[in-house]
Length: 311
Image (cartoon, rainbow, N blue to C red; front, side):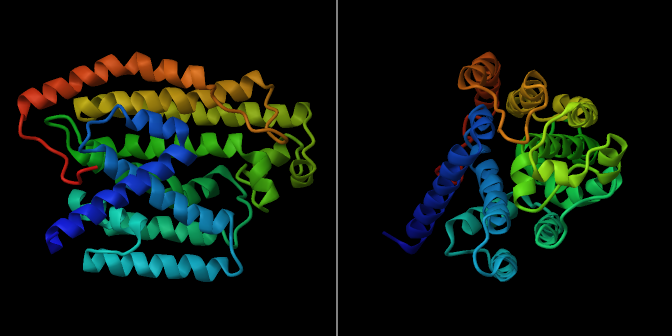
């Protein structure tokens, strides 16, 4: 095996490692990515896996979480400059960033948000939460946008606000689903002023005490999140045609979590609601035909198109 072949094999293995992380930890997300064309799919897996690894350094820390995250971050930034990494997740991310010319500041902002999770345990207002989400969610949408591509005649800057809104909608959905888990980690992602307005003290979350006041708070939060999905919706037609059904499926699946929260009467403090596997498969099946047709059109338009990762 030549040196070039060895590097390609290691890159392919790195992307497959990222796909396995996405499949294990983000079932809805991973299912939606199967609707992407083969050349785009590995990059989205790499972005997910890197975010997951950084998040786990914070949410499931070792003896020195700040040191571990700082070491991982420094290595990644140096490897982006060098163009190679011996770590499979960082290698796939380095390749993705370079291939799609993703701005480095998105990664810097994301790492800053992860670092803040080590010391910040709550947010006084929705505006404060939005400022945190710039690094933890908005830039995720901006990272994915170059991978998905935009439709002919649509500038990336035009689609960017909607990509930002969708990243925020997805993360806010996770926040509402994971209230109980997050408070166990010492963090609350519900605005303190809204909690106070509904008469829900932080101690109630820690005690996992569900009541009508908490349900009313969650009802208002669900409405806020749905408005973010509404803000994101005009962006889907701006994407490359072969990427739209992935985003539609992901939106249906994550939006479905809000529906499940409502069906559970907002009881998320002592349980984790989720979209059932039959529901996930039904969403996937509904989008599959359209996605396949889009892939066929892409192949006809560009028959020499191939994945550069081999993944």
